[in-house]
Amino acid sequence: MKLFENKKIRFYIIVTVIVLGAFYLLFNSYGIVKYIKVKTELDELNIRIAQLEDENKKLEAEIDSLKKNIPAKIEKIAREKYDMIRPKEKKIEFKAEE
Image 1 (cartoon, rainbow, N blue to C red):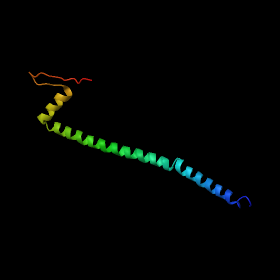
Image 2 (image 1 turned 180 degrees about the vertical axis):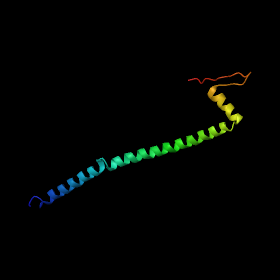
Image 3 (image 1 turned 60 degrees about the vertical axis):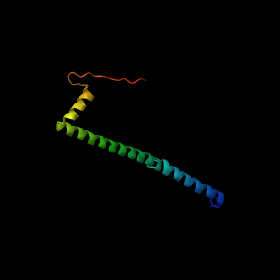
Image 4 (image 1 turned 180 degrees about the horizontal axis):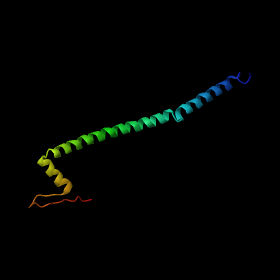
């Protein structure tokens, strides 16, 4: 065929095929762009899992100390979370200015 004998035409066809192939590899539903997006989400979720595991360990330690009836821990929680005070104590609150 004389159509493909011309070097310029053959070059443009090859370049077009390569460019279309590259676009397909990059932007299809299983492409590189999608892979990078999913990989980033996976990394963020793994970081969040590690944070939640640390928080769970701290909460379990707090539960254990409460189960062991450690008086200082019980008093601290009663004062901080439930605003409890001992008899004959006065509660003083400070408000931050904005």
